[in-house]
Image (tube, rainbow, N blue to C red; front, side):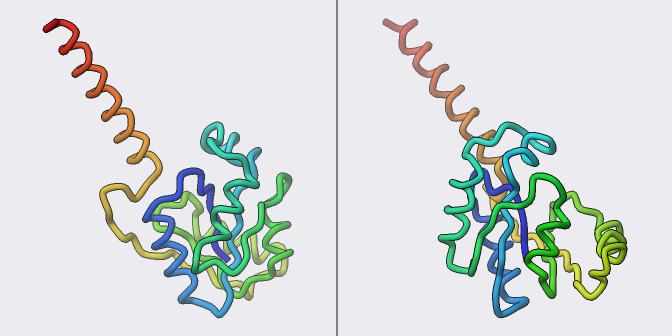
Length: 149
């Protein structure tokens, strides 16, 4: 099982899911529900169903589901994975996650932190920053052209 927001799909997501798929025969991906994204990150650009559909279409993914609004461990119980794959930059503390799993009698689930595959645009923040920089540069060029006229 792997999870994430997946608001702007990028190479970091693809590498994460490819590596997660190598750990097991079946990869179930939990896409964070809109409520969770709002609470922990930002207003989602795409709604949870669109994000789930996009992730579900990726080759390494066998099944994509939207996570519980109430308790993420409800989703873990529903999926009943052998392994939870964490992305290199996900904020989950591995020991705290294992502790919560033990408290719910799910101590047999292995938690693995996956590696970082560096690329210029391997995060949504980098992509957004590049778009903002491009737009700002474009506006400056347009302004300079207007001043020349």
